[in-house]
Amino acid sequence: MVSQKRSKSKNFNILFTCIGRRVSLLNSFKKAAKELKLKCSFLGTETTELSSALQLCDKKFIVSPVSHQHYIKQLLQIVKQNNVKLLVPTVDLDLPILAEAKAKFADIGCTVLISTPQAVNICQDKRQTFKFLAKNGFDTPVTYSVQQALAKKNLKYPCFLKPWDGYASRGNAIAKNRQELVFYTKKIPNCIVQEFITGQELTCDVYIGFDLEVKCVVPRRRIETRAGEVSKSKIIKNLKIIRQTANLVKKLGVGPGVITVQLILTKDKKIKFIEINPRFGGGAPLSIKAGADFPIWILQGLCGKNSEIKFDNFENNLTMLRYDAEIWLKT
Ligand SMILES: Nc1ncnc2c1ncn2[C@@H]1O[C@H](COP(=O)(O)OP(=O)(O)O)[C@@H](O)[C@H]1O
Ligand SMILES: [Mg+2]
Image (tube, rainbow, N blue to C red):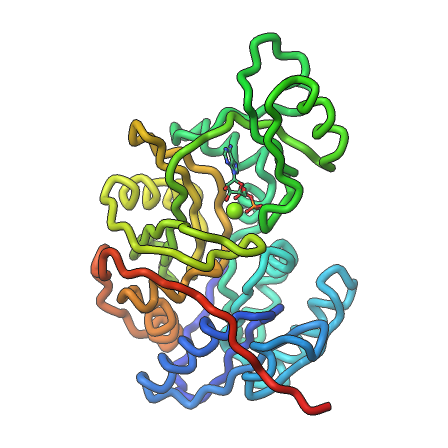
């Protein structure tokens, strides 16, 4: 673990990488800084000016794509030159390299909200996620390699196909029979085959403190998604889900910061865990609004203060309906 002294200064900056459309998350941190009377500036990185959230940052940085060999070097330079004490990743893309480089950021006084490389790998490789969940006794859809699925005589249909390294629901398919299975397994790169689960889909936003303890779990129903991101969602305070998710997160050893755990609640009340994203989820603003004030807790933790966090002290049934808004650029 990277040991690091937390800043006592009230004057520091916060950097969001690949900030994209995360306007609501950015604003919740701005609000928290104001409430805590911190003098923070908000910095963002993107590969293009055409990012709504980037336009709302105090300072914008156009950087190379995550896959570029100098990506981390560029971030380290931004951090060094701008007194950045906190780096918040917002998408899956840069998590593995940020996890690897965490100590380099710590060396220049910057805390990255990122898990260990091992934990990030378990989350980002859905074959590993399945192994981890099954090994530790958590219910999850049975998962096969393409070879295993094709060789299995009594495979149940329909089954669910997705890339083991996929994101934002890309490349997913339902195969209703063997013919479709053969077709899709050829079409989907890095394909795995899963038992098809039906039920209510939920995401849990989980806050893990700087002491790596699980502090709060907020389950919310994914009512509607657009392009893989939730657009309608409702808080469902289900204690069984909260308890099981907390156990899962403890076992996995992720954090610090906010991560999401996705699951399907079946008709017969089984909790089938399907995915873990070790970063802020797109729907986190709902949990924050419901009272799980992650930005306040993170900023307090960063300043070396302990927040009083009640494990399930958030408003049940609060619903978020998202809409589009505009940012105007004159170039
Ligand atoms: N085994 C499954 N059975 C039924 N639906 C599934 C299954 N696995 C995934 N899904 C559906 O596909 C979506 C995307 O899958 P997920 O594993 O979360 O990958 P990602 O979000 O990285 O694309 C889920 O939100 C869920 O709606
Ligand atoms: Mg998902």
